[in-house]
Length: 295
Image (cartoon, rainbow, N blue to C red; front, side, top):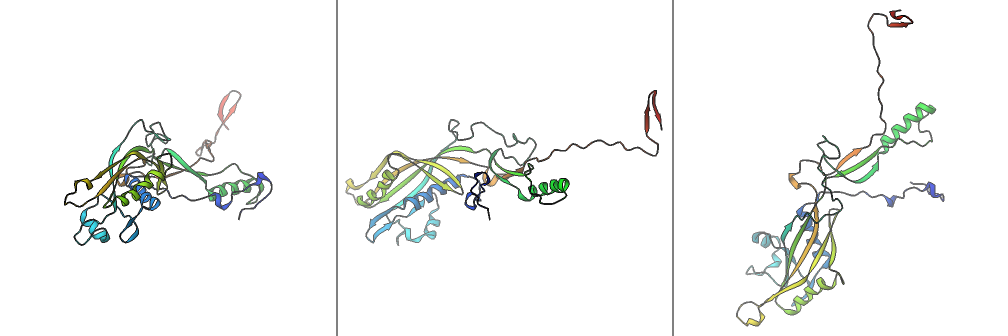
């Protein structure tokens, strides 16, 4: 339990000031899930149907048809056709643009910070004090100087563990969000939140596994419908929303051979041992004024 004091010099960290953060690698799938979860949970699009005010389901368009049928049977009718309104999302393109750089501009190879270390890791992201090892140094100094363990005296021998990660690689991904319905009123209810939710700007942030990415909604909302044809085909209204995500990748995914999180500890004490000469059975040499001779 930290001790509170009115003296600002004795201010201690409250329990809420420290927080353990689980850090996982950032992959292409991480960015896909971050955008999907944000639209599904944060936007939470609803529309007026013949069964009342219902949530519009969203699917990942690249999934196999057999999987979609078995995974969620409510998406299709008895003839295995989709029930509208419906939203689908897919990744349209991905580019690694050298001009798009985040915090780390320079190229840092995995072993540039510690040459010869196969673990890699070049970007420090967190630090913490290793309490048990720091306590061992403090007790050793107190035992040597005061012949007492846990002597109340400050020590400058602190063991700090620094967490390193590989250099992030920044990428730009473009997604297509297709909104489709059978009625004009439904498509209006679905499109309007994507225009007004971000206010006068068109950007928002998405998160997944402790990573945060910035996303932008493009200005144009392309529309497609076949209502004026008055044919026998099924009437539909469709709007495509383009979303551009500025993301980053950390590690090689499942092909990574190095650890994503690399902990390293600082050097607290540097000791250089003195050389000792060990003689055999013969007596050592003694220096006299006229030269060297045996004693």
